[in-house]
Length: 130
Image 1 (cartoon, rainbow, N blue to C red):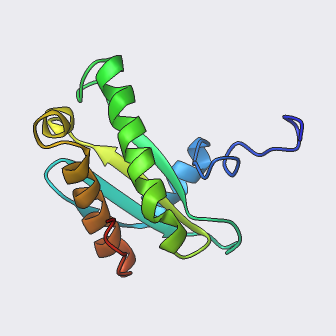
Image 2 (image 1 turned 90 degrees about the vertical axis):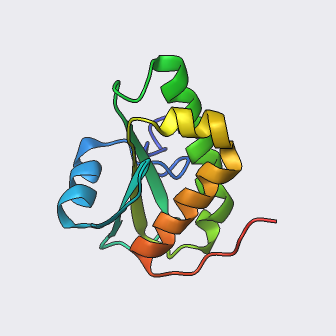
Image 3 (image 1 turned 135 degrees about the vertical axis):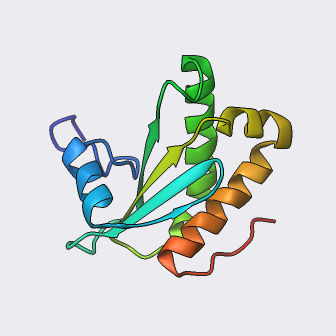
């Protein structure tokens, strides 16, 4: 499959276009915790897996910390994304202190907070990773 055939928003289950982010922010629901905010929006086209986008500002930390946090959040989201409704977009916003929380509590704790917020905003019960 060449690059022209692949759409950037569906190739890895990620939201990358600003219009898609705007739709989630404007028409979606949200749930917030101390370190993360999760927005959810059900697309008109109910095909394709659940997608996730990340918004992590420079206030959260330097580039190395932000990229590590994004990687952890994407990996943890992927663990339960198969159990989410098709055609659903999620945007995860990290608040200042999220990197410190990751350092202190580990990726398991971050995954638990993410799962709780996704459950709250989507109304779905997700299996706990074993």
